Image (tube, rainbow, N blue to C red):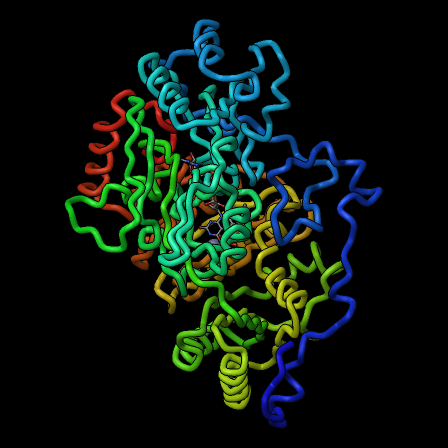
Length: 556
Ligand code: FAD
Ligand code: MLT
Ligand code: ZN
């Protein structure tokens, strides 16, 4: 329970409400009658920790087009061999039955859909073979063989990627890390965790919590994504503001190179200046150079006190003002600062309000979610209370609420974490995750809304676009622009691309703050990186993967 230490001021009292509604704890069973009718369409990887009680998918999901059909300008590279019966025999000779999922050329590959289709239901590959090796040595044998035989490979973790990087484009073999999922070692003194790449992020975090620690990264896909997958994408998540990027917290990696070499670089040193920092080459490489099989990472002590407040403000300038104030006044206990616009909340309301009542009585143009984590409840409560009081008095914050217990805290987070799913579940979503200077951050959402309105594409059905919403990690200068659609449409895509990338580049931002480039942004890297930088990347790729077998048709 959050207990305010002194009485609330008059201005503060009517507006900042404690989040106490009993109905908020109401849960719906996962398998209601209605849901069970459509359950075969629900892929296991569409469930996430926060949302696991609320299944999100259309009653009749749109069939996903093959990427090869939706983007016919991308052609299969005929340097790559097509899978033969000899290749299968080889894989059978080194793997057990449980490690191979194969459907012949004439059979229905439906069972492979969870591996061929991406989370957004935007991209679909045509692979007939998924390999799920249980050891690093087997991964080494597989890659060595694929390299010799020029068989293309897509490394896959939890398949929660949002740029079409984790699924094949054509018939690439999918190498899933699902079966490489052991915690290797944890040192409670240094806080360093060593684990297999295929450990699910939430499992790693739960394990650490038992040791009074936490994983230094948290995100909505926690229940499905892998520790190796988040390293391969250099995921940012909800607490980068506090714990920094994986480029800083990962201390070492174990990687299998395309020729099968196993590079053991599982260091556990915070300081090591002996030459190039090789692990950085694989963090954010999206599986284009090697397969991460092990991760050594610095974890953080579990906070003893956590508070979450959900506040309303009148404009984006006020979002920035509250952020500056929070940095100054909450300082070392500030652990997340997220924002979302009215449209994002309206979309999310349609999706979750039935089960999770919206915490504020009215709607406002913008909302911020502030989380504090510290070691002393009394200290943190007092700090937060003083901060909120003065934010309300100065009218930077116009309404708000504070979670009173863990259930309420989770429910407040839901209003932020469910935005991706709410944007996706009505047909499709065009997603842009960009870095922009804070002053320009929201202008992209405004200008995109104008463009879609001008093009007569936004509005009630049958117009394709439901809403273009903005939210994101203010603390990291990272905007998420989601264009929620009733269906994927070339007409919409043409309005958005390359416009969004041009706009971001004109403001000296990055076209990918955290999701990466993958297939979606493969032609747009030059909006953020210079020619010499791109050449250096290509040289590295050619050097380590001369046959180009690792995750082809993606950004490099
Ligand atoms: P996959 O999706 O399987 O793969 C991602 C990429 O990494 C692919 O290119 C794949 O080839 C490669 N790869 C995977 N495993 C390996 C490996 N072991 N070795 C080499 N390459 C590998 N991202 C953020 O940054 N911040 C967020 O807050 C965030 N929230 C999300 C919320 C939701 C609901 C969803 C669906 C996604 C979110 N993401 C977020 C996207 C994010 O990139 C992924 O969730 C996560 O980083 C991917 O991990 P994964 O194990 O699912 O990898
Ligand atoms: C998020 O911040 O919610 C994630 O990056 C995922 C998303 O934007 O879809
Ligand atoms: Zn994000």
